[in-house]
Amino acid sequence: MLKPTIILFTLVCLSSAVSADDVARGGELAKTCAACHGADGNETIGGTFPRIAGQYQSYLEHSLREYRAGRRENAVMGAQATNLSDADISALSAYYASLPGRLGTVRKD
Image (cartoon, rainbow, N blue to C red; front, side, top):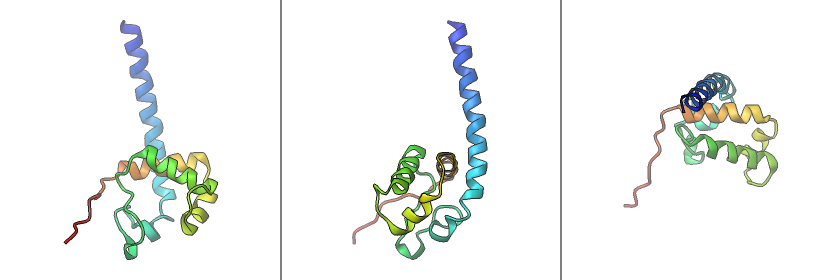
């Protein structure tokens, strides 16, 4: 029983190291994204673009891949995602998922 636990612990540690590299690389790639999503991913520039900081990494990855493939339509995001590799998408998603988000709901008055 101890051996599977050690193996699992090792895998978790290794995946964390990769994620830290992804987060750092994603921070560099995200400089392009700041024009619409803000420097920390928490802006809604002009009320048009969503806050993406703190969003689930899997959701961000899926969305970017869908934009890149043309299955999710948005002229700006489609153009941005076209040049992203799978590694870029993983890095950007890890970066934005690592940030504290200010997600909320809209009040209807």
